Length: 131
Image (cartoon, rainbow, N blue to C red; front, side):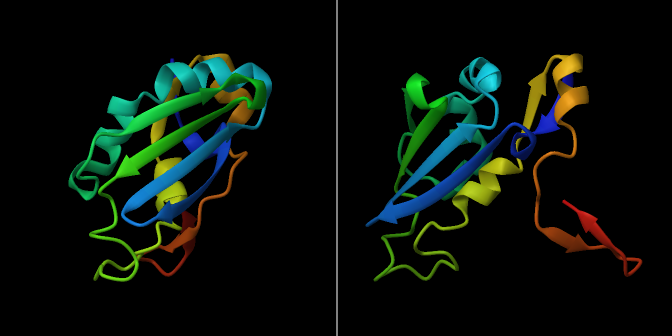
């Protein structure tokens, strides 16, 4: 088994309704959907976001779309109109989730490494690196 970033297996979108964030995660390849189902439990997503999410994370499976949908209640500090959070609309939650490490078989890791794109972060030496 090897660790890869979720972004190497899937893409994601997120948004909000009030104080609730909704994240959709879609496998790039249908054959990797079972890996997502196994690795991305509601508990794992809850742990990944920690204290940011005040409610209990729910997961919904959409096998016909090779996708998972996560609902994160209490994640926006009251919602866009009352929150002092930097992302009061939940738009970057998908990017945050895509940074999660996921364990996959070695042969899958070899095929998917470098596939997704994470935003670049500055290197202390002045070079750009991928997070």
